[in-house]
Amino acid sequence: MVAHFDRRLRKAAVTTTVAAVVVAALSASQAPDVTADGNGRQTTADNAPTSDTSSEESATGNSPYYTDLPPLKSPLPSPTTGTPSSRGASEAGIPATVLDAYKQAESELRRTKPGCNLPWQLLAAIGKVESGQARGGRVDAGGTTIGRIIGPQLDGNGFALIKDTDNGVYDGNSRYDNAVGPMQFIPSTWAWAGRDGNGDGKEDPNNVYDAALAAGHYLCRNGWDLSDQADLNRAILSYNNSQDYLNTVLSWLEHYRRGTHEIPDGTGTLPVGRSDDTNAGTSPSPGRTGASTPPKAPGTTPGPGQSPSKPPSSGKPTDPGGPSTGPSTPPKDPTPPTETPTPPPTPTDTVHHLEHAGTTGLTAIAGDTFAKKISARAETKAGKAVGKVRIRFTVLGDTDATFTGGDKFAAVTTNASGVAVAPALVAGEQTGAFTVRATVIGRTVPGVDYKATVTERVADALTATTATELTCTPGGEFADPVEVKATLKGAVADKVAVTATLIKSVADPAENDKGPYFKDADGKTVRTLTGLKTDAKGLLKLPKLYADDTEGTYRLRLTTAGGAQLDVTLKVAKAAEPTPDPSTEPSTEPQA
Image 1 (cartoon, rainbow, N blue to C red):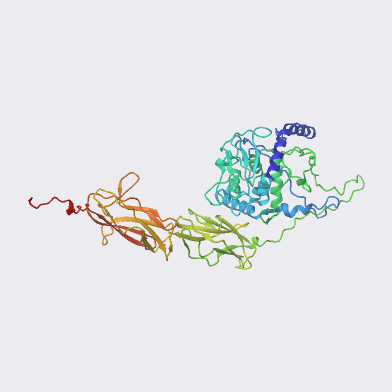
Image 2 (cartoon, rainbow, N blue to C red):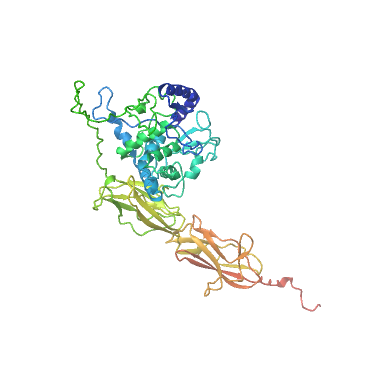
């Protein structure tokens, strides 16, 4: 799919200039106030809303976008044209994780920028036009796209010229910028507009939560109130400065406002028609079959093929006393408006809150798997269990703990009892407390938090694998190193932290100020070592020991979390005088 997309873009770039001339000519011949920009996009000369945002400052760099329009829903479809509503369910549906990201972004913007009045349906409309809702919802449990979504390079060849601003970090291109991710941000804009929408501490344009929140903030800048049509138009045009883009986004916005529903991730329909397709305008693309005409932005002139709207009649009744000017034509019965049926509520729609499902006391030793699994229960307002609801579990905080498999996110569907059980939680090496949060995917209701703690690895026994009594002469070095083995209930205790201290005596465990010592990296004397850890076999070899000039017997104490302790005796004494060999001593007997 990606390779096919790239080939189409390269082909389109070669023929864009010719297409622009053709579109401009058609536009000029059909509507005097309509012109075309350098990419063949229609613009209006006078009354159309415009944006003063440059390509470099826009969200997308005015990159190509999908031009497919919402399906036309009709209660009486023509038998020769198929059933327009046949595509309605898939087109109106939004992948669950993507929909959740839009709603969470709206909720956050309602809190931080209430005057903006951002509707999540606007984010959905832009997401549809920019990436087909993250390529039909191909995202993982954390909302990151499965594979990058990258637009064409903006090298000035049919597109804006934006040289590389991120050294290829996001788009893999170190010469020019490309639009990236489900909301198609260019790196230079993402540098200041990027947000962390899923609380993982990163701002990733490839993550739909991050990208949706960033898009919301982008659309809410400049004090715009998106409930005002003029501000709404300006915001959309600043995202991608094209009149056709504005009309297409407004079309999907209205479509989603009429109603939508969530569909499983990865099952969304991928659009077909694109603004950089040189065949666009000669015949409808496959993705536009049964599509409705996008609503015109207020103040715009009719586009090619569109007729100006007729002024409404005065609506005044004919004077019954006046002369008749001819036989009156009885008024036709107006066609009753087509009502879009409201889809029945999904299980997700009925969730009012989440509850803990009996998960308490989450504690594990570093490197171990937590004995208990986290579970949450989805309930209605009346406390009734709700099954078939997707719950996302997210590991938050400064921790390297993950779910089985190494992910910090997990999406689980509730069972008939309304309970979703997260995968097993695995403690990392980092100790301390952290949080796991459960939220409902596709519905903005308060989540529930679970506190978890990772404690140090422990050992209940330390044994020496070398001599427990070592000797050294004053001012010298101990010839043998100290090596110990840690165990827990008889089994090897690996990666256990060990503290080594040269103490004053068995009765006084304070650090000694004389006798044997270690050296730090600078060669300075130290008598307490921390941060030592046993290896995979539970073994630990201490650094070399030295002795000062003070003779005596000393103690090196090693301790671990869990209560293990071992004392090693160190003796500093002068070397013993060698015993004389009688055979070599001179004789003291008198000579004969």
